[in-house]
Length: 361
Image (cartoon, rainbow, N blue to C red):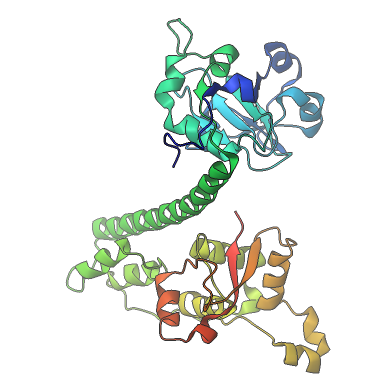
């Protein structure tokens, strides 16, 4: 994508297109006091992993201290880099304002002009070119980069439209990767559960079905895990009890939706089907006609109100984007789960057209 084409500009260096800075030593010693909880996370080297900020062993500072040190305050689309230690060169993208602040041993890299250099492109160029980063280390026994070393790192700057195309592809792939990671985590939890039952002597080997394990690695939802694990024990299988929608918290419902549909598109019909099938919860969903007939239902906590608040960014647990999909014109690409694709494959273009949602990352 960024090969030797006429759209690729002359290679420059980080310092020519970005501002590079760090938390000064006196700022740390004079102003910074770590807390175990708080509003502003201090980004340390151990928190910079795989392009993201990880809250491992997180430490915090108060907002007043962060505001007092604007040079080392982190903003959305800043890129941070670890510049000392075994994790030297690890980078991450800051995705929110007023949430993070530099800690020692981590540098801030801010593009001078967003119309010239995309932060997502910058992030992945640095992730892909670790050898180039380490080549600029200071000539000392300890692995380290100083700010000038970082500024000297060369970087080709393609046409900004190419960078934006790359960013769109990356965001989709990253969402799919995160979804896959959750599936792997679910598989590992099942493995632990089965291992535990085996060593406790409660695993029923007679009814053990190897095929059920193979299905865990297919592109199917991990919902049956608890059911499969239950079948492998000597205890008689029990049916999932019906959950009452009113007893399901907004946060729990939002987490179910994010775990299922991150990286995919879905309709209200698909969402209702998913909740009924995988969680045995029958969500209240009042039609426009019902709301007109019974105005008091407008105050009800039904699925429609959840979707409405998520689309209008009023839900702190879930943010949704919506768009109209025209199956005849096919201007937009749909990414559907296996179950939802099967649901639509026999339908006409008119039946497949309509409002679709996607989860905002």
